Amino acid sequence: MKTRLNRLALFGIPVLALNLSVASPAARGQSGAASLTTSTPAALTVSGDVAKPLSLSLEDLRQQPRQTISVKNEHSGKDEMYEGTSLAGLLKRAGVPQGSALRGKAMTTYVLAEGSDGYKVIFSLAELDSDFEDSGVIVADTADGKPVGDKLGPVRLVVPHDKRATRWVRMLRSIQVVNVSK
Image (tube, rainbow, N blue to C red; front, top):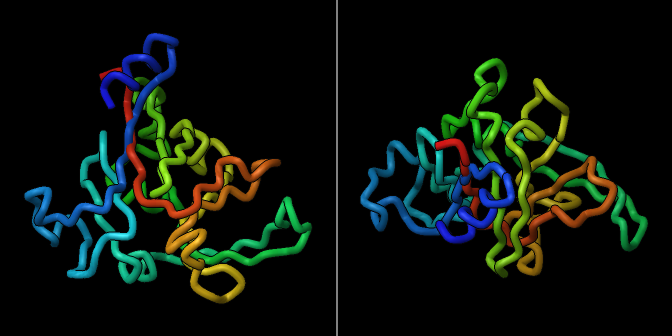
C-alpha cells in the first residue's frame, strides 16, 4: 500500500486513505464498542487517516440514517431505486474532517473505495462534502426494494451524479481515507 501511495504522491496526487475492511474489531485488537460492530461479520470497513475506524455489519449499515435515490441504469436505460446510507455520513462517523474543518492540509485527502473483486476508485474528500457539492454518493444495501444481490453486493457504492457508472463499486468492502500531507 505504501508503494502505491508513494507513486501517487510522486505525481502530486494527494493521498488520504479510509479503509473499510472485513476484519473484525477483535482481529484488529479493537473493542467492538468504538467501532460500531456487532458480532456478525463486517460488510464494510472504514479505515486509514480516520479518528475512529469503523467495521460495520449489514445490520449496522441498516441502522444508519437512510437515503433513497433514483437513477437510470446506463446499460438498460431503466430507472432503478437504491436505498442505503450516505458515504459522507459514514466518513463523519469515522471522524473525517467535513464542512468548515475541511481546509488546509485536509484538502489533500482522498477516499479509496474497494470491492471484494479488487476494483478500486478514488474520490477527493471535498467532492464528498456537502459544503463543496451535493454528490449524493450512498452505500446501498437495497435495489428496487430488495437486498442488493450477491453479484453486486451485499453493499454497493452508488454515485448518482457521475455521467458514467464507472465509480460505482459493486461488492464494496472497504473505504480507506488517505491524507498525502502527513
